[in-house]
Length: 263
Ligand code: SF4
Image 1 (cartoon, rainbow, N blue to C red):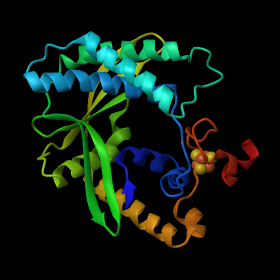
Image 2: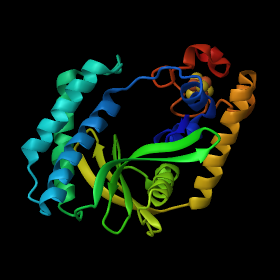
Image 3: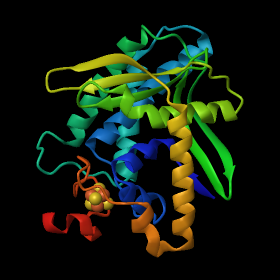
């Protein structure tokens, strides 16, 4: 079964070839200081909401949430390929844990303004035929079905950047029998700037036409490449202009003809 992950759609939009090398050719990718920090904040958020749902009360336990985040960071560092930026001397395991714990504190403050959801960290999948499925974990489904995602970033997030991912989550929820009538989605953003860690609640409108177009395009192009791998450059073009086109982000960097002159 070939899986299309909503969280990988932004990778496809940034550089289709990079997406294909990871999703189809299974080129191993790696995590970074920022991705592990995000994973830790998610663990803290899951901890408070799981308890709030069980007790129907928002008596958040910050230290329990921070412990959950700390544990998650440590386990991720032990079990996954995580590469810190060698040019940034502030990136150490200790600073990663400190940052994550601050991020959880900021998230818990933000959560005071958020209603208790119906579910969090819910894995959903749907078979779209021809040996393809869409599958991913939805961070937060409100009682009215509105889908939100927790995003950590180095500056205030732009919710429109996440239209594809959040739209697929909405469709996945609907296909799994979860009512999601809201025309908008939410981003629960924790921004780590050099001055402060700040939480924002952001909102944007869904674009479900874009979702259909993207899923269909990725499925069709993947099928074509699975039939003839030599056609990968036709259906998944490179985009060396992407700001994520860099050795530290792209596992295909060493082989990619589009960046030959930059290596
Ligand atoms: S090196 Fe750049 S252009 Fe080539 S696949 Fe990676 S991100 Fe795309």
